[in-house]
Length: 395
Ligand SMILES: Cc1ncc(COP(=O)(O)O)c(C=O)c1O
Image (tube, rainbow, N blue to C red):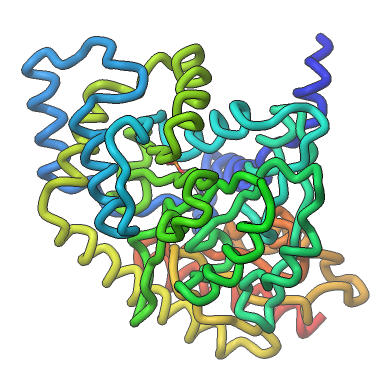
């Protein structure tokens, strides 16, 4: 079998690879602590489930409009208008099968072979592969750790070329937990306003920010709003990963172009899930606050534990549910792991704890720990990470 050139250019997801390895060990009866997946351990809120059950009982089980049910599109527009002071209508919104589908459909709708897709890195593993699937070329602009993992406007400006069709930007950021406030965004916007590049602003973690950090949507800046595609969804904020509902909000010509991809690929997102997502967005938001408070408690715990391990440096994340510590002191020693991939393999094989190598996100010397797991799992997982690193120090 010879797969298409397009498929040959694409790598398998490295986060899924480590999760698969962990699952294989679990199948052998080994007690593996998995801190690799970006999936909240909470149950979907009861009122959301009830809305879905009611939808099934009422027979709301047929195709919907391929762009999504009007009331959900309107609820998404209303939410973003409140947050960004914008004037979107339901026609600016597409409901998709998860945020991932919104991003992929947008990349396909915007990019031709020869176009460059600029990605702020470290980056979510799927972005470059999506660019390649569209025949475009991924390019990267690296953030600096000493800058709190935020990309500098000057670095962005240097990285943009006449062939840059699209920038993919994630705020709050997976894997670093960095969040861009209004001032930092404003600096980036002043660079972007001088280009004609489109920007996918992946804001799927927008509701998961801590302390006095505020989530500011890139749609808050009218000067580039026509070229901004905001991606959001219910997976992370409402513990609804399996329901597969995401959103795209964009100018009408962009939304219409992306709607063609959606219409010819998935027809529509699951009818019942759309009703559930509507209940999530329009219902009581205390579930979001409660989950955020619990994530916050875990975030502090993980960072305290990491800070107590010699030679591990950890920046306190401002959002999302990942910690991205620097473990470079443990790499490249004689007989030790050469890089973050080898370290994660070793932690999984000898300590039975699964975390993701920073190299998978485009930043060596780090590992990503997801704290979307229970406190009990985190305690056990950190004990194992601590023991694994202590063994490397002794070696
Ligand atoms: C940065 C980022 N964007 C988008 C997604 C996609 O989320 P979903 O397709 O479940 O809505 C994820 C999930 O891990 C993510 O981490």
